[in-house]
Image (cartoon, rainbow, N blue to C red):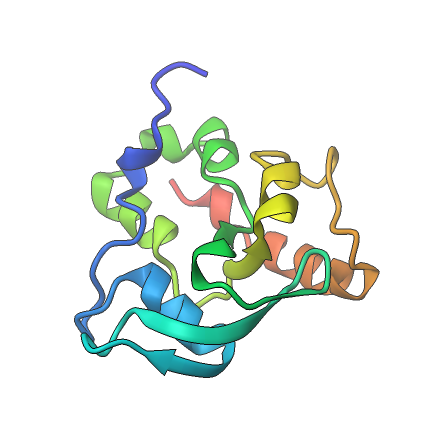
Length: 140
């Protein structure tokens, strides 16, 4: 895929609260989250991986996934977006496009779209479809 590189989306950029997008998602979506001394990076907690309905209890194993993969967005027109549009997409905390995923489910999904991959957690299928239907990749 010509020209695609993940860094074009400035993923995990700083947010107005001084934390990164990743840290904010971990805090937002976790249970019993204890933040470290910096007030941002969780040091412990538990997270439900929405794709496979497993519980992740090690911070480093709680990956954050873009429901619409960055590579798919690139193939669908993000290569024509401005740097600010790509950054907004890659760090979107408003539209529930970022979810906790176990390392194995995130790896399984990779940059696949819904034609090639669906969560094993069937209870999440409707949410998965709803988020994808918000038209993230139609921005130009």
